[in-house]
Amino acid sequence: MIHVETRDIFSLPTSYFEGFDIIIGTDLPIQGLNTLNAHARMRKKAFYAAASHGMYGYVFADLIEHTYVITRAKSNVPTKPGPETATRTILTSTTEKQNGKDVELVQKRESYQPLILANTSPLPQSYLDSTRRLRNVTPLLPCLRALWEFEKTVVPLRNLSATSSADFATFKSLASQMGRELQLPASSLTDAFISAFLTNLHAELSPVCAFLGAQLAQDVINVLGNREQPIQNMLLFDAEESLAPVYALYPVYAVPDGGMRQTKAMSPTVLNSPPSLRI
Amino acid sequence: MVFEFVHLGPLESRGTVSELLLIPFQLSDPGSSTPNISRDPDAYFSSSSFFLPFIFTFCLPILKTEDSSRDIFLLLATGNQSCQSSTTLRSDLAKAIYFQLSYLAASASKAERTRVIVRLLSLPSLRFTAAEGRQVYNGCERQRTSNSYIQHHHAKFRQPYKHTARGNQCRYLNHILICPASTSPLTLISDEIALYDRQIRLWGMKAQQKIRNANVLLVTVKALGNEIAKNLALAGVGSLTLHDNAHVTDDDLCSQFFLQESDIGRFVRPEPQTFITMT
Image (cartoon, rainbow over all chains, first blue to last red; front, side):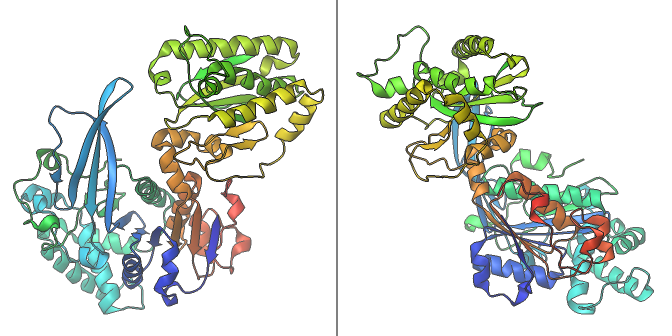
């Protein structure tokens, strides 16, 4: 069933959002995303934000608290319930036989943060501990944060102009400030990238949208069915590099189960496989 | 007549799929005798002795019609886990169906091009109750003896499915029968099972049910929103609300595949029937 809504979404009361299970905001400025996210949080609904900027794009997920089941081949090492990463907890694990093979059904829980908090959060500790990993973090992350900051503070109502040298300078200083906050090496954010990003802003390319739309829709479907690992919590897509890494941006204080943020005690499987996706 | 026996295998349909039969049944051990109808009605109505004749009365009118190049789909839902693992049981069932259908097809002149595709679907909690089984059985017997049986039912096949009884009742779709399990009601209708067959095999009936009942709000329909809406609608999301209060401009035509030149100036509003086949 398709419904069409043409009223101004930001003038609608929170009760309007009660009827939905999933709220997706695409190609919106940061204020719009934060408002939608707040409505979704108040009504305890899953929220997705996404946008495409030419060759670049992102998908952000705030599922509040999401429990799901993954089915995998039973390994020799038993799965122990308990915290797995800063955001993920293993709840239960059961084994059963399917088509003559031992499979393991692991129930996990991911806890999420709203966009407004994720935007000021550092990269996961496993990144901060490794210079090599920090060097490989896509410059798209500081650029997106700079874009949102730009929308909020500098010119709220005007689109950034790629040709204006004043805009470029403002944006560059914002982006490098964001890069420093994320503890990224200064060398990763080049002038060439910033200029490419600004040129691509608000452009729409079908293949990029197809990739992002597929990632988001797939995640929505998996979330509805409570299966598979969902996006936690920021997927960045760089079509120039054909890379779509997922970063878990989580505030330092908000570690679930009252524990300290883990530094060395992360499970080796998590450390060895950075959550990136090559296409 | 081409005969295929598919057990959760790849599906490709060359003809038009128009008929679907969903019968819950229990596979009985081929060596054992037929259950006694008066002593153990539960066992009888879920045994192959009961459901095989039922399949044949269903297939015969299709085989005899002039348009026999269609595929006949038999989707057998079984509550019996053993049919998944036991090849013997499966091949015995295949043989039984094949011989019966060949015999029937011999009397139907134009049946060479008809493909019969039998597929097994395992739904562990699906069972006939004695009362439901007897009702179907009586109905079949009555229809089989009727002279106008073939014309009557062939005409009925083309009628859209009207009555949907919810809950734990047995539902009849002319010949097409869905018998929900007594504990978890199966509210997907057979058309949907056929339409979403490949994805149901990927993520299961339960997930499809949840997707079907989901309400999704999509704010801003631009190129990325188009992709997301298309993907979600194709997956069978129950309700999709598209929000956009901007008017269509020239630029939107480049990247939005739902829009045409005549849409310029209108609200962004894809016509639902362009991409929705089921509501």
